[in-house]
Length: 269
Image (cartoon, rainbow, N blue to C red; front, side, top):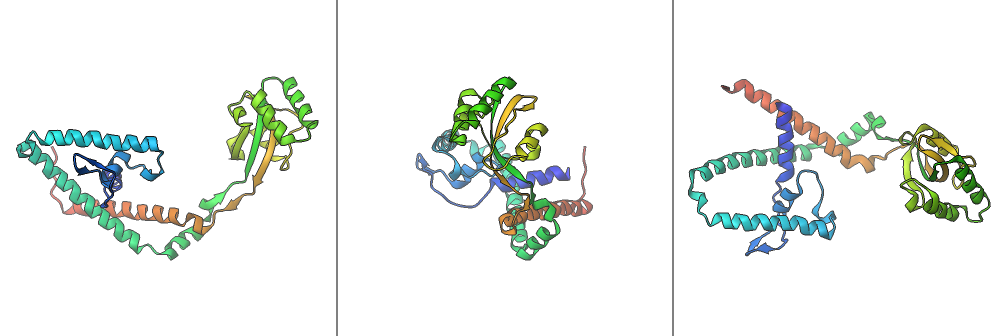
């Protein structure tokens, strides 16, 4: 029950922010930032990061809701008992939300950079980054086809350009259309045979023998590699702050509920 309450609290905080912005009007009524955030939901996606199509869709949803709300307002429902009852419930929820925002702000203001650094130093394992490879591959069904591709690459004056060309022409893998590019990956993200063969390569080299996996036969080209390391404090500082503040907030909500329950008279049926 407490965990559900905490979840509700965090969701509510994500929905309500006091701010003002102008996204247009509907019959003279402004579309506000708060309304945009309600449509966006608690996922943390910023409206400004959306493409024009998605922005138009979000604003369109608000326009539709405003039109319906304005039409509903003409019905005089604000004088009914049902409306008044629901309004009181909304007021109670709003009071709770504002209180939670204030408590969250107190926690955020009290968090010092020294606290963040202490957490970083004590939990360095959490910020380790694995070794990564950046590779491309050509996937074919038969070993003979892979061997023939390797011969073409061996005879090429521009191995990388030829590799990209062959990947687009012959690879049966989904990355073929992009020249076989697999991007960056840690060794545990690929099947063992693939990772082992790729990890043996030097930058700019390709496998001289077909690499067999459950998917077929691969020719692998190593574009680059990164050694294992540890993320810098400055790069993860905001992440640590967010996690610590969230943990403090959850504990505050949980302890407050427990305290209130001890003093409350609760009768359930």
